[in-house]
Length: 300
Ligand code: FAD
Image 1 (cartoon, rainbow, N blue to C red):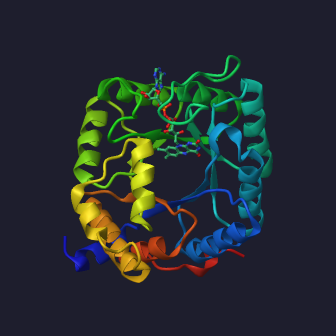
Image 2: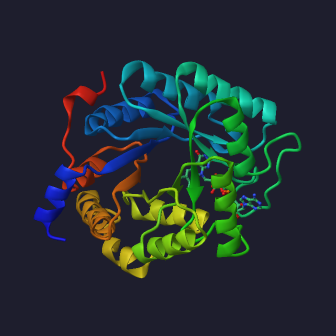
Image 3: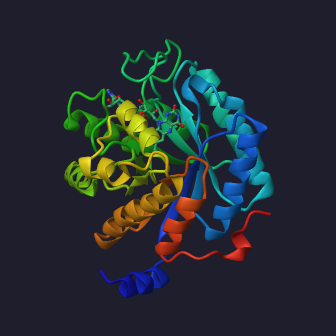
């Protein structure tokens, strides 16, 4: 697709994007997050999501970040929530707390094992056992929009792709209306996964999760923990740039733009960006996608 056609398509049928943030730990991190939110808000994302730390470790900070987004911006926030290390009652209380401040969208996850990825997962005896049980529990509490995760390279714990896609089907049957994928760098993996999911009769949007590579070593570390593969060509593009942040940033923008343009050319119209609380790369990619600030949706 030519850039002219891309631009005219994006005017006729605006793309939808969402941005993921994590709750800040320090006042400095909070300032960085808010600079990023203020920069990205005028792009009118469909929603912005705030993650939930392993084992509920960020429960208060996630809640506080959501509350501030609701109080100070016109953005629609989505709250991540996991089943880990909590009873159903505790998790339900978090859902009710979200509802009380005006959150209407939850990203419902099982979460990682308490001892970290790669160790066996054990559900809390009084808790929600699987993400599909959490989705059903949230449905009982209120009329939330519910997104869930999806794994183009299959979740590392899944015995097979079929088992993992069956698990996604259970989440959809329980009431999930959107899946957001784990990040991936090879778009063929996403499209092959999409074929499997559609063949299984799952028809909810499977929104690609895009991780702009701000720092190759960090991204490779995330990938190793989450089971995402890192193609040799990606490593080569960042080779020799460890001490050259300026070139790294330019290369990162080029690599991410190439990925999203290829997805766009193949019909993808909705993207979820893992921002790592940084705006610049994501803003640049959205600009390249034809998105422009609309002042009425800006952070107050
Ligand atoms: P699930 O879909 O629950 O799958 C986990 C494993 O269990 C898979 O192997 C699956 O096949 C299997 N499984 C699922 N359902 C069933 C079932 N009914 N019966 C049998 N087996 C089943 N982690 C956080 O701690 N906080 C976050 O905010 C967070 N946000 C995320 C956002 C996105 C978009 C993604 C992709 C991941 C996120 N994670 C987050 C990471 C996630 O918690 C881990 O990957 C975790 O290991 C799995 O939880 P899940 O809900 O993603 O996977």
